[in-house]
Length: 291
Image (cartoon, rainbow, N blue to C red; front, side, top):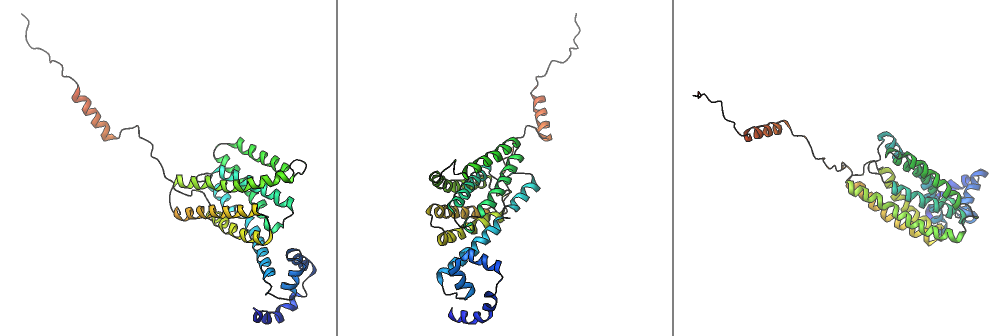
């Protein structure tokens, strides 16, 4: 590492020590004065704690950036197919509720936005997907009620005068359970249908790697076991869903054939023949003359 630092310093320091003010301010706000000076200004990469913090910040920013588009493929599949096959409304409703609570909890606790920012972007996309699932299931009124209910809940969660921090802590514990429960309906739906239907592979695998990265960023930046355990359990269930995606990759939804109430042509002919043969024969006309 020292040899690498020695080789990089003459090349990087003329740049890192003369960065524009706005860029320098962003770096300091992300890494703090000490780690910014160590890693950026002095190019000392051997500081393990600062190096881990930088990786955590990079992962966090990457996750937030990816979260802005993670559900777009799912939305496009829904809009193009106009079918909610393979998708569970309950899964999206539970996940959205969990994210809304976590977003409010993290914001009110003052945690770095880089450790939870994706919840805001994913929650918005989830609302759109859940509303479309209801719409394509013929429940347009329920979709409107769902959106209105979430708006009211969000207002309450962000209002200290309505919900205090002690209650928020309890809700965050429940949000972890909701996050876990939100995966189960989708897993069951895929298993029952024998197909992933309109489920987006991009979203599934993005969730898998995102939850794994969040375990690392939480360990580095957030001293909160409730959040950590939520990400660990979420990663396990995301892994199950990813395995289902691989297993059912080219599988078509299982269909139960409806019983046919119509006889085919040969069946009708056979039935007519059997009916004719079963008719009793009547007596023919008599030729005997009456005397």
